[in-house]
Image 1: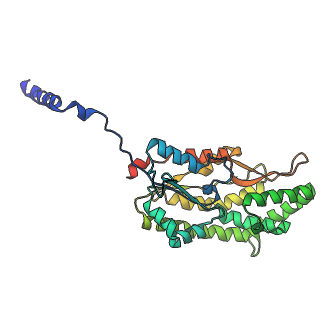
Image 2: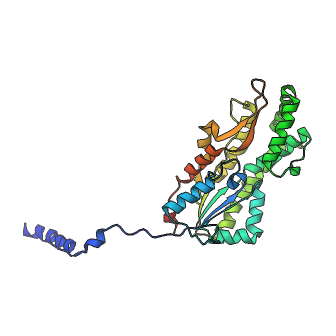
Image 3: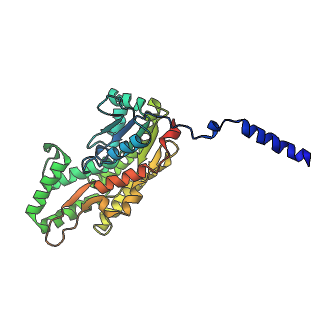
Length: 309
């Protein structure tokens, strides 16, 4: 019995000898994170209310919970830089990571990098097809928002019958795989993304192998009830792009935006059907303020940036 008690007594003595401070909660270290957001018009924050883009929300979350380097890369930035560019596609992002000295410098220094890219691979040909239908030049407008407003004016002036005829022609072109059609261009741009995506990660990892990267999957802005043919066509195109992103989960965390958006129609204000005598006024494929909030929630589901230091 005494032999059994001896180890217990020794353990008790050791516990008494250890200072109480050793059991106290260790003070949290101010990490002074550097947050960089790169990508397209979604990354840029288009269609979100001021201060409520996913970038602004996530930057505040990082600041409140982990701390940001207030002097990076300059005091006014406060440790968070939004390098999103309206209209950017995967080819242009890859080129920028290879050749843009300023962007490369930011990537090299960043602790956390969020990426939204791929949507314009499909949207750019769509804009081109719509511009051709209505004989307007998108480049003559200062922003995609201004182009959309001008297009709405054309749609409203022509009326429902003309809209439906143009939509039928647009749909037929989108569903086709023949050279010269919209569908042919969309398929080519999807293939381009499949080539660009791993190369984008290669560039980031070469510049900064320690960065915590979060990539966002691509959502379908078209509702099934609104236009079944275009909904399924878009799904055919975006599905392999999302699979490519999911395949790289060992290299980047993935925010599964498309699943959350599918559950919330108001995440995007997009509608093609002309109803009740009024033209379709919901033709903005970008996330609404609610949509940006959903993206932010998905970003927070990833591992804590603390574990990547």
